[in-house]
Amino acid sequence: MSNISSIKQANAPEDHEGLWQEILRNPQVMIWMSNPQMQFVNATQPGLEFYGISLEELWVADWKNYIHPEDLGQVQQYYALALMEHPVIKQEYRAKKHTGEYAWLLDISYPRFAPSGEFTGYVGSIVDITEQIIREKSLKEEIAKISEWEQNRIGEDLHDGLAQVVLGISLKAMIMENKLKRRDLPEFLVAQEIANESSRVLGSLRKLSQALFPAELSQQEFCGSLRNLVESHSQEHGIKMTLNVDPAAVPPVPEQALLLFRIAQEAVTNAVRHGRANRIHVSLRIGYPGSNVLEVADDGIGISGDPRAAGGLGLRLIDYRAGILGAEIEIGRSRKGGTVLKCYFRSQDQ
Image (tube, rainbow, N blue to C red; front, side, top):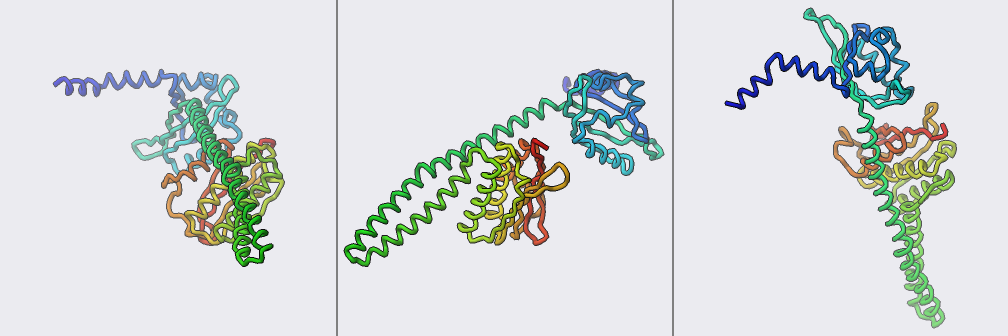
């Protein structure tokens, strides 16, 4: 009985009004309303205080002046879509506060219609999600650091441990080969084969350890590490791999270069392990103004649906590193039927 009573009490009209007034006063929620031309006609006090303007100033304000330049194009696309098709819109962007600082906002907007069906504008709610974005970025950086630490550890173990053991086997095999050869024993050919094979394994181990443990990468080291990556996968898996790098597109900051190399490394590994590719092409070039492009394309089995839906660790690491780099990842089918991954990024000096 008490439960039914509480439900009735919660659904009472006066409680709805009280809840609405509480929402309007909530400093964390900014509510706005527009006319059919998408001009602001009303906003709650938290929103006005966020921008540091009055309601009268809101009516004549140009909202484009408040949007971060890097997010303005996206917001304008949604603006045009709202005018033409009137969909529900959910977007994240940065806007300038009254302090002059930028904050990340989550804006969810709903179209309004008159009883006759005529479009009358939008009503939307905005929440400041800056702290959430900062926490997510911090978490991504921490995950990437753990992955980097683990790869470095494996690289060091290969270089300081296994590679030294193989080097010892190679040297002992060469000594044995010389002794057997001096005694004119045919078994020296077996020792020679062991020495040669050990040398090949040692070369592969060194390339692998360099790929796993590049520490910091200058522009020149980045190109060398990428060549080693392509050569080692080509030799190990028998895949035709090609590489085309424009040195001008290589990030000048070592930390950026390392992040980009790791993205290329994960993309190539995914193409080899999951894409069943016979050919892989890796390229780094200058793209549209202000943005460079890393591309990894293969002729494998391709993708179906959303590749992120499978939740693979490799792709998550690519996304994490791209987030730290401030890059955008685009994955789709290539013209040859395989998969193509593109990473659009800006160098810090651009």
